[in-house]
Length: 278
Image (cartoon, rainbow, N blue to C red; front, side, top):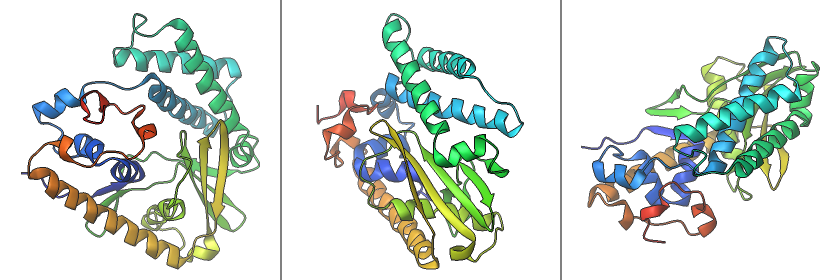
């Protein structure tokens, strides 16, 4: 029997809203043998580059928090080692990916990190203008009623009288209709950590998104109304995810579920090999 889902994250939400089939394969009853055959062990080199970029940037932050700065040479070296390890772990050896392609990915990751270090918020952390800051991983959920919500900010800093909650997205969609409500989910984490509850006076929220070769900031001051709407969004999402799960259980065939509307979303999908859309 498949239990009702109680988990929410921005990643789950993005996959769910874009492609029901992909969501079912990734998150619903994904231990079935036939699902394993569909699922395979595929990750595109580009996705592994994005993952490596994020991993290396947080390693850089960890050292920076200890007062250790990285040179460009060290950044490149860490990227090369990290990406090579990722490629090998997913079977993308030298026989399947050329050195030229691998060097292009390393260069793309390096450029992405260097541009991020020049971002107005990140640069103030790097040069010491922001002195009180921390970084976090979204691996522990926060309890919200019966839900488990993965919503921690990537970076938290205090400047003057405000706490600033920052989320990074190393490969962002161009259109994000619910960006403010998705970002407001970080406030659930802040309340869990017993920060001051006067939201509109004590917090600022920032999304730093990479798209079309640039890092872009999306910043705003949240309100109690926005927090309430964010909570409603989470509850509605999980309700709809469970409705999809009920539909899936009827035949246990993800290929009968709705597919992505845009082929652009399918380009790097790890499950497209057996997708009826192709």
